[in-house]
Length: 92
Image (cartoon, rainbow, N blue to C red):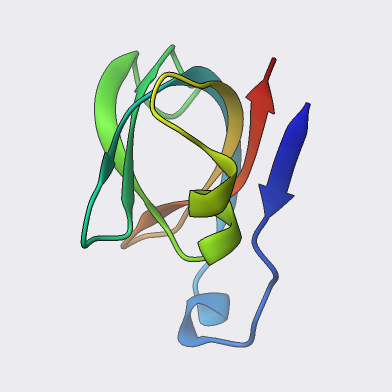
């Protein structure tokens, strides 16, 4: 298995309460010229139902770790404004 994590940095986001959620899915698109990876994912308990949607990534290492078609386990950070990927592991 290969994976990557976002390195925490000091930012205004730290002033908002952040919740973390685990999920699994499949990368269906990497949206060029953006910081979005579209994932077809299962239910994320207590957060959202199964769907296909784009997730923002903030660390370039996350983009470098995945390809379209990869099955992944991922972690999402969520605050009152945004959702973003903080960890992605490709399941081989």
